[in-house]
Length: 199
Image (cartoon, rainbow, N blue to C red; front, top):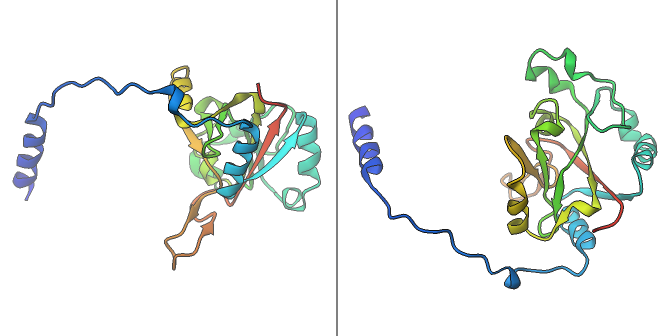
């Protein structure tokens, strides 16, 4: 069995495909939105996120404090300046210790109006597992940092190095009896706080 597998892999490796240039993008034909902010909100809410329009981090703090679900959270971590948590990542010895995380508050670097996705690079979190293991995720995003579509988003990704992830809505699956289940294998809720106006 192992020998047959090796033969297949060797054949794949021996194939040399001709070099081809990446296709040119016709930027004039790509989708345009009259209102990036409205489109981003529609897309994010369509995939299960909740979007809040705020003018400052102080407003975010007040909004969260008025939430009974947030108030009942025992373990809250935050990497957003002005939004304090009660959990210190400096005390963590292994990623498994994040399993008790109720709320994780982070900043997103930019959002995509086409699908409501938000780019979160590794330097926005203490450990990449925090984005996926927390029960409730809060992402703070500047409205000025919205891109219309994924083509523009990937152009912007050239400025970042290392690990990052696009987050779009809370985790979900529709495999179970063909009914949509939110929070199946990651955060149960995603709250996006959009600050200010678009550029």
